[in-house]
Amino acid sequence: MSLTINTTINGKSVSGSAEASTSLLEFLRDTLEFKGTKLCCNTGECGACTIIYNGKPINSCVTMGADANGAQITTIEGLADGDKLHPVQQAFIDTGAVQCGYCTPGYIISVKALLDRTTKPTAEDIEEAVSGNICRCTGYTKIVDAIQLAADRMAGRV
Amino acid sequence: MDYFEPKTVSEALAMLEKHGAEAKVIAGGTDVMVDIKYKEEPGCLVNIKKLPGLSAIQENGGSLRIGPLVTIHEIETSALAREKLSVLWEACHQFASLQIRNTATIGGNICRASPSGETLAPLLVLEAKAKIAFSDGEKTEPFASFFQGPGKSSVGSKGLLTGIDVPYPAPSSRGVYLKHAVRGAMDIAMVGVAILVTPDAAKNSLQDVRIGLGAVAPTPMRATKTEAMLRGKSLNAALVKEAAAMAAAESSPISDQRSSAENRRWIVEALTRRGLQQSWQAATGKEVA
Image (cartoon, rainbow over all chains, first blue to last red; front, side, top):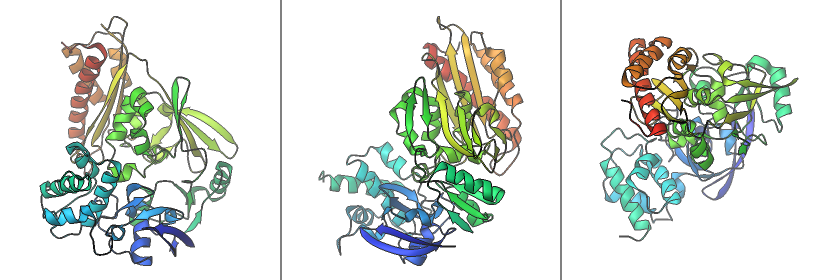
């Protein structure tokens, strides 16, 4: 049974069709061609598919595509302003927080959502915000450094 | 697979009545979508996420009424829940990841009826009640008799959970929810223990004590024999040790990929011991001697 879905992605209205069994992740990647959001565990455990849904970070792999209907969605493609990267993206590059990069879009979306909530996150806020994201390349120190740098830059502290 | 988005509770109930066991109710989707991907598709999905009137947290006399569509994160950020129902709040705070807490609903956690469901042992010790609607009427049922086995509850295939009433425990009571898992975030509990202690007026003995155990039996359970043994007594180290061993003996865990049964019993013992010590100290200001 095919459903018609009208949604708003990165500020633009878009439509597409999906089956009831289609996840929001599959709808984004396969129907609408937003390939920045990554498929990994497909069970809501790794955070690679994180998007912002009506203002909140969620795992798109365990959300129904049908629930995109009428929703406001932000994906990684919506962060940069033309050629100018979002401060969170720039901070990940500047601190070397990216290795293979597969988990990075999910991390950056989780961090964007954190910095939308607070301009001065504590160390605990930072850990909490990305505890649903897994990076398998390396340790997490540089990712935490990147988040702190992005927060400081966005608040004009550095 | 058919798909329905009912507009009202009665419309949803009519659909469940018609499609029965082949229908699957979905709200947040964090469990059901995984089943669809890795197990099997149901005959039809009934999406209740947008049903009106089921998404509020409201104070109702001496209790909190929580709508089944309230997300775990909404409970985590509710000042009322944090102040009045700290045991439930702690379980919500430790629940999976922020992404999941933003999507998963308390109704889904309950109706999933998993022995390890994070909110279930807290709901048992808080002596909460479920409101369940059927096409021919509504009933209220304590969670004490709600869970019937893994995945099985009084909601069945034709009912709909429409409310969760959680009475406030006595103001002098204190409690904790302790969870043991390998990874801090995300992991399903190997064991979860919810404890609520109410001291007598002089803060010398246990007027009431409730011990809820998760992931160690076919359903979440209360360690009722242990509770009865403790009630009315003054807590000391020897009694805590005896109670912890008794709670472990009351549990009936299985071995699975997360833990052996034997290990689960040890953890029940350790968490019951810690939980009693912490709750007693919080409630009386005195360490267990």
